[in-house]
Image (tube, rainbow, N blue to C red):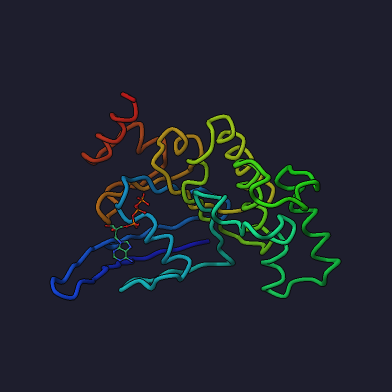
Length: 238
Ligand SMILES: Nc1ncnc2c1ncn2[C@@H]1O[C@H](COP(=O)(O)OP(=O)(O)OP(=O)(O)O)[C@@H](O)[C@H]1O
């Protein structure tokens, strides 16, 4: 389970003229085990800042975050997340080496299990990132994240750089993995269509604030906040 209570983050900067951005303002939510919570909002509304606070990459100014188990993230650009100089096999093993998990034989066995989970063949292990497709690269990133047995995955626009048909395959795979492994997901997206299909609950975010939260069908079907209404309208008109 993940419980976020009243987190806030303000970025300050500038030497001559002070700048001040309230990136996240009093955000609270809970993700129950095995559930998917989506955050939808325009660029710059604070989605990544929330993800970074969950990953302890930045510290909230106030509020609390309780995480039961390990949390991992899948980014938008799988090709830049993989080391171009390292073979896929090594990239899959690396997190286990860093965390001193298993001996060499155990890691090799685990790599095979992980490939199986994401429906890829062992022939990929000897290739470099430029020798695999975008969809395969994203599957490798998912396998790599799973190597540390996380309970929660943050999916930060995980398919927005992929072709539509490949997007659907990766999203279906994520759903299957959730069932199989009992994972919880925090799904960050602009795409209401995918969110509607994928998320149990969503929050609509505007300028650092959650303006509306609830079961996905309720929020999209009966939007209450003005911003949500506009978002739903623009998505239907597209
Ligand atoms: N390290 C930082 N220093 C100063 N301002 C920052 C920093 N990180 C983010 N911001 C600002 O905080 C606000 C929220 O940014 P954030 O990256 O969380 O948005 P986002 O919703 O993830 O956007 P996108 O969908 O484009 O990734 C933006 O105005 C951004 O410019």
